Image 1 (spheres, rainbow, N blue to C red):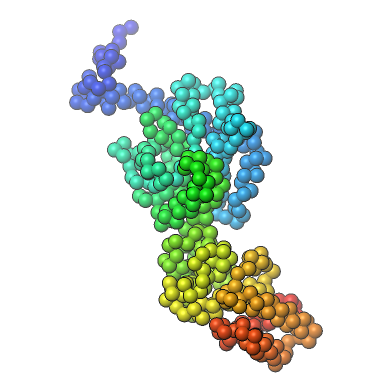
Image 2: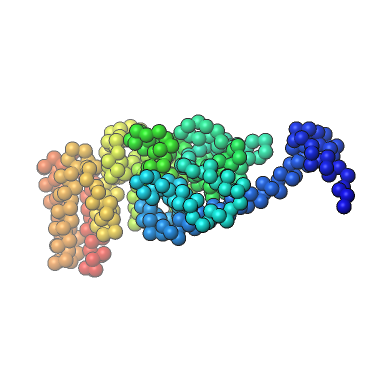
Length: 438
């Protein structure tokens, strides 16, 4: 049977010669490209199938180890998107980086020795073999190349990588220039591709996240490729905390002033860790859920959150005077607002966990002593209420006696006594009603 005219010419045409079809383009960019696309599409499909097969290999053969790894990330009541992202990254890390033995064999190596490997054609195997030694990378999305492929700049090495997408769901559906992507970029021909998918973060959290991850590198003393592999839990935890803070900033509060406190905190704390900011958000959410009172001063309450969260995290720069200066408020106002948070939590069993961690003082030198005296007073008032019920005058006498004693001992030098008196009365009433004495 005769071949169609021109078919043999096209088959023999050099890739850089003009295409015989008369388009004026090089053969590799015209008819030759169409032939290549069909072959590369087939390989792309099989590479996606292989990625999924590898993940199933991990989950089926190392299910217990995968569960133990995921247990290190607190995902209870977290958004489904976050839980899915963590699961993907954790399983990918186990595949490429988790050592099976002292020799450093990985699950990826074990997969290539299993019967699963035989199902892939040689051209697909050639791609996959180059993935040995893959480690997580943290990159900045800087745009698209001429072929509309994403370009990522590694934030640790500065290397720019073109990313060929095997499928659209490998890349974040919403992403802007400057946003951060975290995941595994593996070789694909002369560029890279995503192994399964990438975890993305808004550009606003890039500097804080990079500082946190670079600190992990400084502690390890290893080259970036090694500590991104070996300290994966800490690195992914840093990504997770930053994602949570970005999510927290979008939280829908009941009142604009409540939202303004978090916004004020964010604007004044570009150097604070995501862990500290998330702790501050948690305290504020608890506080707003328990009281209908709105903050009388947005900067004061934002500063108090920074002070309290900083002491809980044992973070540097948590002194009242420094924080008050940064927020342009009075130190005594910060202490008064911090006392609001303390008294809000003191009588709530659900908050005992973070109260137990509150080992530093809010009130500088005398804070520990005052905290202890307030605890003693609460025990006394609870016993009195249980025995004698509510009596306004008796409660006020208990408060007056405590205030006089603490003042005499020098514990109230920088404490707003009016605010303290009001908070003690509120606590007494809450104890009375919450314990069922009423």
